[in-house]
Length: 281
Image (tube, rainbow, N blue to C red; front, side, top):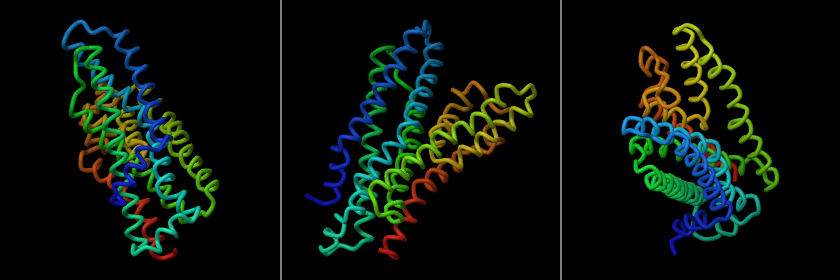
């Protein structure tokens, strides 16, 4: 079998990846079922509003857990093999370090793309069965792209850490620290500096400043990409119910900026790891 496709299948068969995707999907399913029961749309207009909220709920749940998917795939595909010396045995074959790390990275991208797509399509199908309404395709596509960029970014961090630390335990410990700082601590920073002022501000000017601060904080954090993607495709914050008077561009959020941020966070950690793989190892 082609080594690249073998790596993709190895990621998809990894128990940690499967368990994470299944548990996250079940958690999202429970949340959506509860919401569907409580909302019980009685008109097409109400159902349309509910689908927006459903996508928002899905997005926030997956945005929190997808970094773990990235960490798991990055560790299982490259970091662990690098730390334990498995890659050295592969390098005795006619393959360069550059080609090896690039192949493993692309395998993570393809496997993550497949896993996230299956999870979102599964929930979309279940929501259609429960409510009779499909989720908005543009919102699912926007969310999908942002979740993929988030997962790949965290996987790239594991590739990078593998070239800075030599112990599997140290690599996993560092990955946990990165996850807590970016996914948890940064959320509380966002909550107190952006979300609370947004909902407590009395003037539109202060609200606009709060929205601008939220956008800036989320741009500087790969875990914030799904939230920004939903804001963009839904036309406003928190399901599109809060909209800046001057449009999203007035608070610094544009489609081009969002795409560039996704590419930046997807590529930067890996490119740093790629340079280290060529220059140091």
